[in-house]
Image (cartoon, rainbow, N blue to C red; front, top):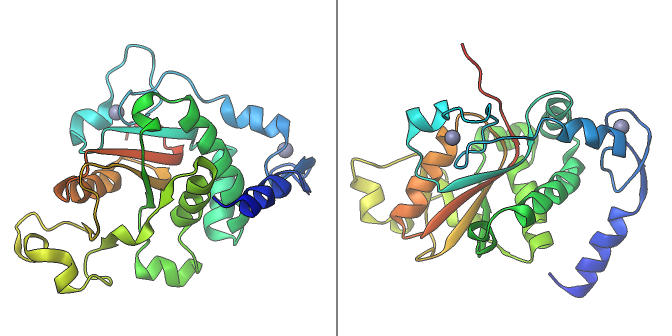
Length: 238
Ligand SMILES: [Zn+2]
Ligand SMILES: [Zn+2]
């Protein structure tokens, strides 16, 4: 990140604003300190791989079903009230500036995570479908990923990952992706050999999307794939 960009970010962090949940005085567009306490209250014991909130000692039901190709997930928050309200404002009500504090909270979570996470060199978002991009006008995961990469001083490479049939030329995809029986929903079209790649998403539900992305990145030679998500959905027994 360039020096003027860093100053701009720091300045924006201190601009007086209102809490997007309770309208109390706040700064930098983030929730007020009281709402931040409510948001963080859900954090506790988690699955060491997919970050699902669990009772201490409980086995993770999602990892038991999925056997994920990703190595681990870091989640800033759980997708429970009032976090769900903020994510819905962000994704569907044009509040794309919420990406700023989500990236800030996620950056804090990454800094507290293990050295495995600290060795990340490339940051990219889960790509939106063309349909979702047309509807929203932006990729929510991309907004968080771009700002997170800037805060952590890491390379932001959104172009390395494409959804199948959406912009990847036959030449870019390579023979295996064109013809292989494992051709998945995502393709990696750039150099990731030996790299630790962070894949950013706004919400992680079952981990199936992150798994599909991790399969594509590892097929292309990525050494590690870490999911960085703003919010993790709790397990639902239904
Ligand atoms: Zn508030
Ligand atoms: Zn798990």
